[in-house]
Length: 85
Image 1 (cartoon, rainbow, N blue to C red):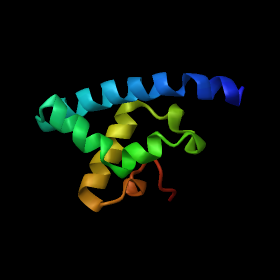
Image 2: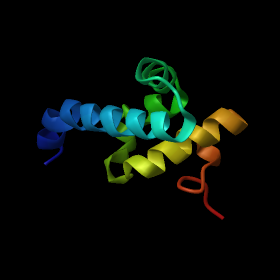
Image 3: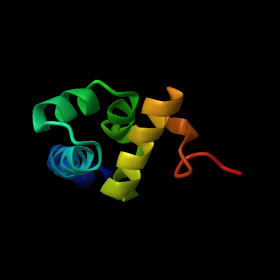
Image 4: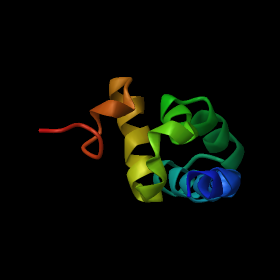
């Protein structure tokens, strides 16, 4: 099963990039290239692209929220989607 997931992981990342960048553009009025550059250079993206963290269950809206949290606090782990209270 894990081997099958690894095989499709690049397609998942493409999906995430497309929808997350579109949402960042919509919410923050950024141009697509600027939004893509900011997302790809973020800790949020490093976490999403780490297969071992298994973040494929997160929606693109949750990932955008994590990215926004990172922009404000410096750490996407402060997001309500990750922190436990």
